[in-house]
Image (cartoon, rainbow, N blue to C red; front, side):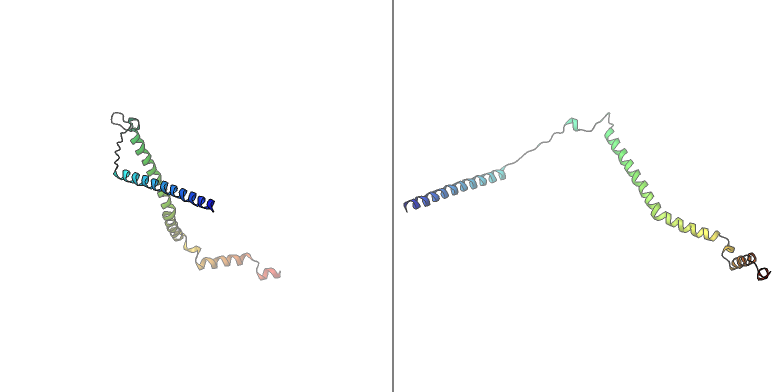
Length: 135
């Protein structure tokens, strides 16, 4: 039994030591939180001249290149938009107009019943008549 008391006492002492360490760490965390809340940070940024845009006598080639590239992109976008409009809108409209115009310019005789009867008579004249067959 005496060894059990020593073991229990050793565990209890170790537990007390760990709790003291926890309390010390909690105190440090509280101190750092309060210190950070009271602190102020001043930052001053100074531009580096090497990072500044290139300027030659008031002329900025970088700005001109940027404007030229933007103009190129706008031109390409305009051309693509025009192609899309032509394919989706203008082409079908032109096809309808062309079909109406084409059908109105065809001679009426091509579709008239008289033309069909004339064709059938010419086909009958090409076939041998019944009299020719008997001879």
